[in-house]
Amino acid sequence: MDQLSLGHLYGHARYFSSGVFTCSQTISGRNVHWYWGRVVTCKLSVLCPSFGILQMKKILIATDRFLPQWDGISSFLNDILPRMSDDYQITVLAPDFGKLTIRFKAKIIRFKVLRIKLGDNYRPIVNPFKVFREVKKADIIWVNTIGPIAVCSIFAARRYHKPILFYQHTIEWEVFPNSQGINLLKAPIGMATKITGRFLLNLCSIIIVSSREQAEILNFAGIGTKKRVVHLGTDVEQYKQAESKAEAKNKIGLNASDFVVGYAGRLSLEKDPKTLRSAFVKLSEKYSDVVLLIAGGGRDELEKLFSAKKNVMLTGLKDDLAPYYQAMDVYVLPSLSETTSLTTMEAMATGLPAIATPVGLIKEYIDDQENGLLIPKKNPYELFRKIEYLKSNPTVCFKIGENARKTIVEKYSWEKTVKGINDIIDCLLPEISAAL
Image (cartoon, rainbow, N blue to C red; front, side, top):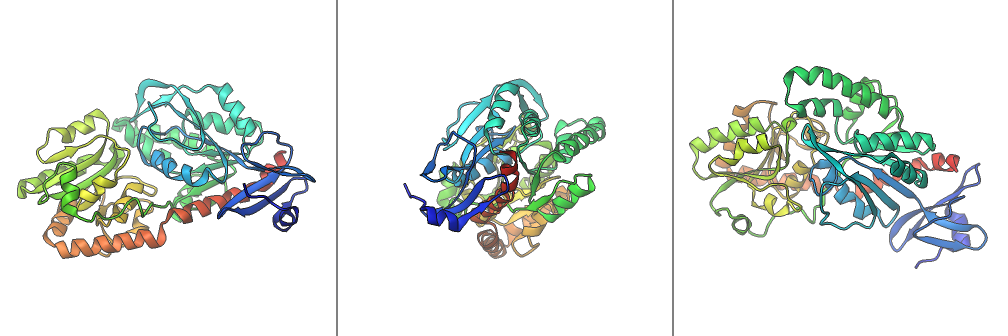
């Protein structure tokens, strides 16, 4: 193990009035953050005779969405945990949605879930004693949702004066009402969710948002907590073009000559699958070689919209979406609400032209007609026209796909995301020292 010399410690340390030393040190090519104070347990430490134990910071991640149930938050955590677990001691509080097939270098504490759905998701049964115990041991509480685990973690963090980092993956009061499927209840559910969200987010120390627009939405909602913009990244080595598009199609059971229209991830009402269905029905009536590939799944009633249709492949939720992106010719996302849309970025990294609604960050990273196509919300005919345009113009389709990958590679790497999050965690160091 690499050793920190005492002289090197002096050169890189910051001292706070509480008597806590903190420093950032590069070890084996990694930027490792340490602090020294009145904490006695440590997974990875360096002994310094004059000062005691230098330790990695302990981060508790609270989430009400987790694997093996795939969605945007689960995918984000699946990508970010391996990239941060060498620099921090990480514990995750999450629902138990079944057997985990992916192993993480982190302590995972899971809670049983109620077999009653709220919207398109089951809710965990939280043990507050476990939550408070883990919060007390942590240095920073990192919350990713507004749900039972997250709410309990926020209250526990306030009880023990721990800094709270909230990652705003979705605008809850936009998404949750749309996920219920009852139009008469949308307004009251939206108002109640907004009031709850405003109260909880104002208890946090800092909020990470994916765009300035998202920050303004929170400001307008009366959330005064300071906000920092960090764009999500994409693994451009995992998501890249297949050497042979024909072979990629054959591998998943499609014909090489098929024109494959793709969608990936969770089927939920806020993604507006009805618009996708209507557009594809019109497309399949005109072209016999068009296939709709849905690499995902969700609510039973939404899956039934597609499962009985001709030329539709519905795979269910998958651990690895890369082979399915590689088999697609175009990617579509007619969503009503998004913050970033990781699946759209993954598809673009794979060299696909994406047709999407201009919601959230999408309108910032898709330049219409250059690296993708934008369509209005709830407009099946316009979606049909854009798909038909790309099908009829393969050279344009290929060029837009090339530009799409270039955009993601140059601007949205995971390295930039991790650096942005690390910088924000560093900003919370004074709060850690004050709590010791």
